[in-house]
Image (cartoon, rainbow, N blue to C red; front, side):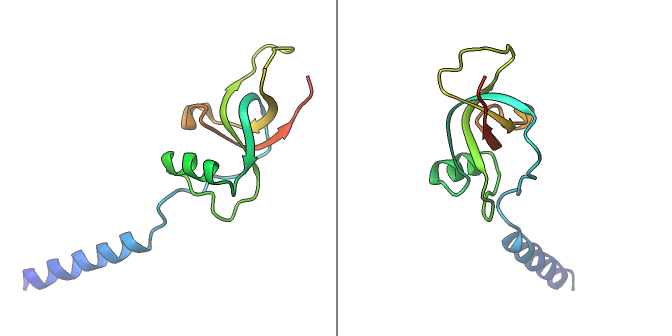
Length: 107
C-alpha cells in the first residue's frame, strides 16, 4: 500500500515540476536608479534572454528596454562612456548584469 502511495506522490510532484515555469517573471516598476550600461536592448533580444536565464528570470511576454552590464551612477556629471539610463536595477538581486525598464537620460 505504501509503495502505491509513494508512486502516486512522486508522479504528482513530477507533474507539478514540469508545469512550473523555469524562471521568475520580474515585476516592472518605474525606473528609479541612474545606471551606466554597456548596452540597452529589447527584452525580446537573445542576449537579454540569455542573461535573464542565468539569473533565473523569464522575460517572455515582456517588451521593455533592458540594460546589460550596468553600474550605478553615484555622482552627477559622471562620465559614463557608455549608455546613461534610468532603470529599475536591483543590484542586490542581479549584481549589475541586468536592469529593466531603462529609459535614456541626458546628464
